Image (cartoon, one colour):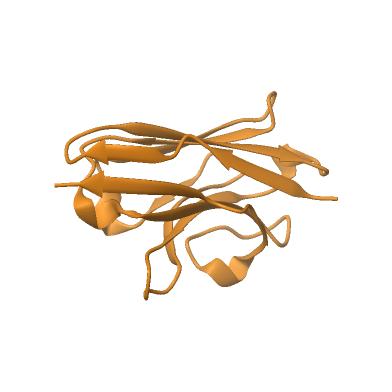
Length: 124
């Protein structure tokens, strides 16, 4: 079965950095778009970044220039490098796998499988 396990969250001060990782298993990792999403208390889940099978990249405007998504198909892993963190980045971060082999982007409805999340807290 598909499993996604995130790690790397934590508490940092504004301006700090974190690197999130997601270990995937149970399917052919390289065949699917992968994404990072976040959800803050009382807010809807938001697409942060996505990476397609051909290396196409999507970022929400608020993280452009600060976050970098990458994937290592040999290690079945997804990463999110985050710098210049802001208090508004505080949220639970989830990695997700697209439902189908085709299609990628930041719309959560494109994704069927989700990890349990890792908390990122940025203090001012």
